[in-house]
Image (cartoon, rainbow, N blue to C red; front, side):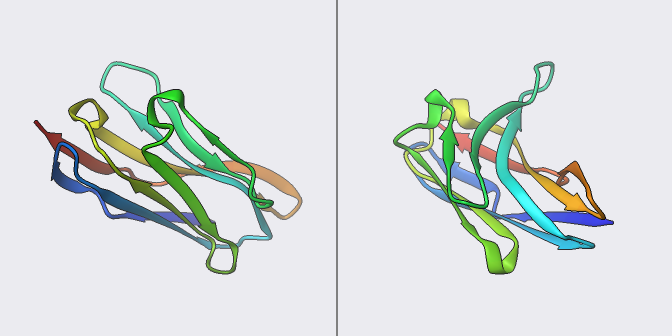
Length: 119
């Protein structure tokens, strides 16, 4: 069993910053990519940023230059530094990780953390 525990969401004014954290624990052999996604009610979950175990990074165009993803492989933890936040960034953010367990790779999700940006 693998668990992803997120923290760091909250309420911030437009232009402010928040830092999200996601720690993976459990029967982990290796973690391939880790990342952050967000989902507005009624819409599909969308990629925000991902980072591989080797450090390759991918950002959604809407967050490039404002958000920064990083990873501590020793702690199985991924971070998302969000700067210059906009009201349209308001939604639930989910941590996702492709984890290899007993020879098979699965996609796991955290429970989600709410980010609210007031105008």
